Amino acid sequence: MHLAPAVISFLWHVLVGAALQQPFETSKIDPIAQGVLNRALADNIDLSVHSFTAAALADIVFWSHFEPGPEHEYALEANATGAIDTHAHYVPEWYAKLRGDNTKWSLEEHLSLMKCRGIATTIFDIPNPNIFPKDANATVAIARLLNENLAALSKALPRKFGFFATVPLPYVDEAIVETTYALKHLNALAVALSSNHEGQYLGDPLFRPFFSVLNDLQAIVFLHPNEPLIEVDGSLIKANPTRYSSIPAEFYFETGIMNELHAFFLTASISTNNARSYLISDPQHIHPSSFHNPPSRRILPFHH
Image (cartoon, rainbow, N blue to C red; front, side, top):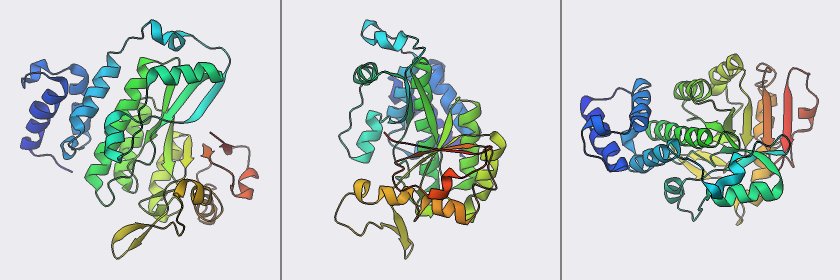
């Protein structure tokens, strides 16, 4: 993806100016937003493909300058003990609107929940980021915006928050770039993968170069079920045969024997890349053999 000068100019003068309510002179752009744009351009990521980029950049700038107040007292406490919540979804307002849901995430409410439940640290991930099927540029751009957003939030409250990186699979080369960037530059704690990405399951040979890089990076992998999809005549359709939501009807099977882990074991994806830990959400139908693995590989199921 090579960016024309016109695209670069559009990013600098329109998107950032709109996001930060600044004049279009680049000298007045917030340096945080400027850094996000510079790093994206260096990786040939075109953030101008999305109409919501301005809102996403504004969120990143907000969290980068955020200072906790008296109402965020719990955020300043250093808990020596307490639970670590590794299955929490952060949904920024611009992303909720994009998904068409009514989710409204509140920092104050989340901190209150953590204090009430004895949670010392929350590790966030983004639910189902593959919302632009068959569009590599859009998928790559939103992954970068989501990771920058989560990194800024986690850095603002480092005693309480961390995050798992979003990756733009099934686009393998781009996913390798984003994973390396998120782990090395943004300090992501792990990589979040869905049971399938645009209908391609994790045991697909297409993903072997990606898992090889994860192995080299000694990355921890968080596995989460996704809407089951199949490709028909070049289009992706939902493969839920019931009239019920996929969350209760299909997510368990996505995690279990039929799909996610079954594909892993049949293709030896785990056994050939075994220097990592796998965190598995919604494990009610987990593959039995996942608990019989050598000490060098850990598969850790957990619930919400």
